[in-house]
Image (tube, rainbow, N blue to C red; front, side):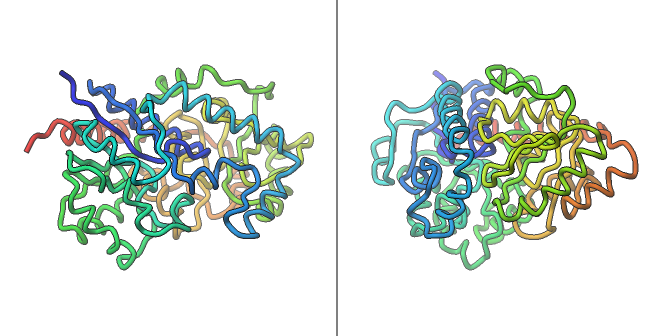
Length: 382
């Protein structure tokens, strides 16, 4: 009989990367022949952060930022519904939903193997955990069970050694640990004394064909045949300063720019199309159909290269930006990194920007290594 696998991750955050990596982890394990479910754990902190259009539990600044998004209220409601529809349709969730860590004791023996990750489930500064006690990370550290424990491609982001000391002991109790960033793998290995391989983000384990099949239910309003996609996770104040540059890009390429900015409102005009209604399926379709993607997002970068869409990845060269920089470096795609949106103008002015497909062979090799590691860790019996 097939082993039962239970996954716990940030599967219900209304964030493209979070939901899509959750699906990718589940699907990758299912494709290996296992009976897999995603534990429907939605902590109150996550519901407070993503479930409300106007956040009132995180101080005055987030609330003001949400008020600045009021013109997009109806589209944001559509977006929320699309996320929930995607989660319901594509994730195999446990029958019971859990809100509090202690509730997970009920399923301590339900699965043969528990898998935590991917995503920033071990990053104290993630949206779900930044205002909580360290104990809020315990569900993702699988402290509620003594069954076999694996964490795949989990990310502590830029947490310091001192911060990581708070979770070292639970990490030591994992049977297998892997990290999606090279520096994180080295750091966690040093602190735990365990072998920690650097593996690919689960979204890269699925093929373009897999993702396009998942996105078949997308409902995108009529878009031009040719457009540039700008996807940013910055807020309204920062994005507003880039409107002129975005219009200049549209003018120079003679195509409109589709602006997907979940945390920033930009009025649409003949050069810019700002849409806040996109769910995960629409996000995939937008990247696949764009002639060029310009993004400061980790998963925006990963989906662009996986779907074969030409892209430029904006990076500050420090902090969270190094996550995507490391992936691009491994794939010999560092020339796709730019320092700012303004840099894209000069980059594009030098000539037509086309996708370099030479990375495909290397990506396939890294993918096979990651899938093999995931398979080995799941099947290994001590």
